Length: 155
Picture 1 (cartoon, rainbow, N blue to C red):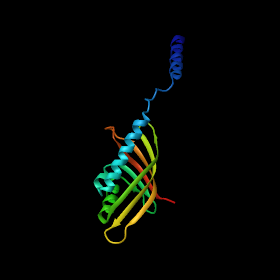
Picture 2 (cartoon, rainbow, N blue to C red):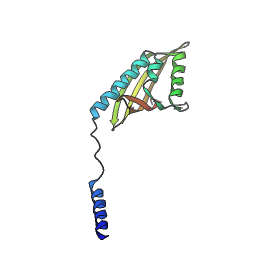
Picture 3 (cartoon, helix red, strand yellow):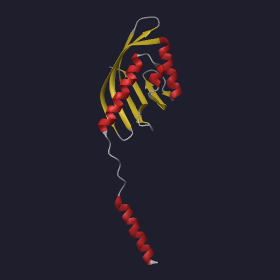
Picture 4 (cartoon, helix red, strand yellow):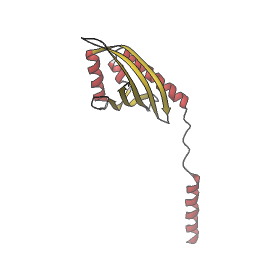
């Protein structure tokens, strides 16, 4: 009985001393490049007034928050928001500037500024300047999509 107890203690101590499994190295430069490429596709879809192209870059569980509006939760709600904007407006200018991209294994946080000129079907164009924060998540196919987003007017 003592031998079995001793073997159990040795096994327990050995397991405790091995530590956690090593996590694979993060290729931060590659992730930043992928996120930057995704943002270029996003800006191009906006410039082209392409609601399907904009919505395609968001995950199915997307959440978007903007100043003065209710939080948009889920891809269906996001599709509806984007369709509604493009049904009554046209973007004539879109400029995006990335200030920072923080990366981890399957997530990246992008922070930056934007300038957009929105032309309603009737009335004067409106120029919007603001800041954004996007959380990108790696998809099963290796692509990156926006899982969470937030925009706010620039001070």
